[in-house]
Image (cartoon, rainbow, N blue to C red; front, side, top):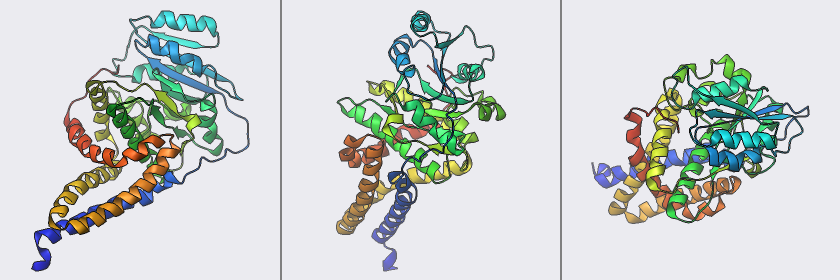
Length: 372
């Protein structure tokens, strides 16, 4: 049949894949593009425990802990630092900080009696020793973007939330690698924040995450994933977050800022460690994420083939898809305080095809046991 010649088959497949991408853009990502953080209900602010775990993070603790201690809050809050068997100057750095800030709480671990790999044992120890019900988590290499970070990240609890997802940004520097790191971070947040707004929360990032201590204890902490080195943030949230108990916070004052990797090898090692946990997500989450990634990948394969067969029609499809993407992605970039990435959207969208090829094999590799 003439209608089913190779050119037409390619174009039909291209239209199908484009329709799937536009569905994601308009049904999921547009929610975040037009979202405004909700005002909190009236009521007294609850006390909060900020927990930071680190191993051999002396320089980061010295630089970032003071900002945690200077948060503007109407409620009492505790800063609890968990020193996980560090062999550098961490102990002395923390002792000096404690001397200057008596309210700082330190928990020094000399061993891991559980043999639990990764960050989960020190974080569990921190949570069990936390003085307050509301927990706010970040990493040693992160700094709050403002003195109102705590206030913004805990505001949704007044509206009944049990889990609050935030954005952990990376600092901006010159160079293509920095653009890659920041765009991939934005693209990940675009998905987990949008899906949460659509009632399908599936992960959070430990750089900026909050949940209730009681939720952690009722779900037996990390018991279900104790054999894995990763997952203390995304897999735990994948397990406990629901459409009813999860909220997001997007205001730039509620972000955290981290130092990005400076070499491609360091970044690849970091992403390999993080990427390996996604194979343990719930089945419906894997379908949701997999369909988007596959459609994203196939779009560029099919658009290249369609250009060979009928470049005018292919160009029209490419332009329509790119227009919707630029409008929605650009709005989210401004919301997440990443406006300079807007002009890089097309290049980075192409780069993501390479990203999928580079990291998809990690789904089938065995995880490393180290978390630091």
